[in-house]
Length: 297
Image 1 (tube, rainbow, N blue to C red):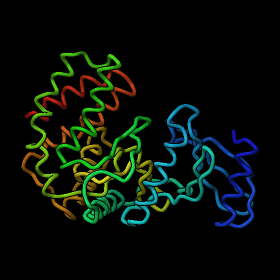
Image 2: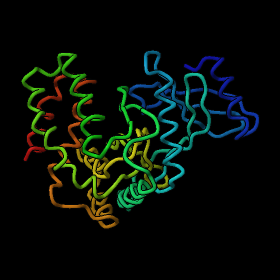
Image 3: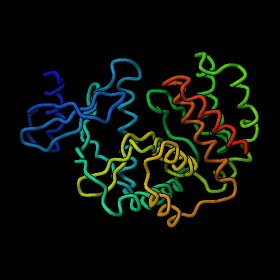
Image 4: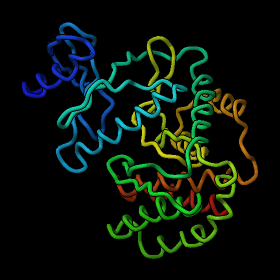
């Protein structure tokens, strides 16, 4: 599972942190639908969570972008993330976070922590991110826009629409159905403009919440950028899995703007639904068109 060369490179890279270590074994674990994921047991050190880059593109660039996002979230310190321990040729070593059942206040802590994390974006100069990154295995452009509405149109919805149309996953009539929404984005996105940028996880679905043996929550697999805070909440609501206390605690920490909330949520969910169409096919199209109808009110 782990070749001798990678094992030796990993042990060498971990030496500044743990001293002299050696790889005992590597066991495949869940948590990676794109990358191979392993628990690596060490002689002389704690277990490590290791991701191996997929052989096809984007390969190692995917892990580099993840490491950059984790470093930013870790520095913010509001929600726990695995620490980046080392990186090498086609691999990323992270702190092993032992899983367990949620504690009695885990979802509340996550909701309040996410609200505080989002407020960290107020330090940003604008929307976007210093570099492009990925959503799943698809490229995610983050160049700075004139405003939030332009960002959501040009950096999020349109690239996915073009990809789906070119791949034959959206018929011409289906693609044209998005035109009224694209034209209305400045109105729908008004809340994002006046609230300003938030530091987003960027891919906050239930599978990217990792509940720990100590009962606390952590978040994993980020695709960070600065955007409207409701994007993370829209993704969290899309596929379920978040306890009710999560939303209540978030709203207590930073109340949401209620006017137009449902339309904005649907418009933000459209990005992730289109990503699923592009990754997994037209089976996600009915849900996508339903979200489009909700976004248009």
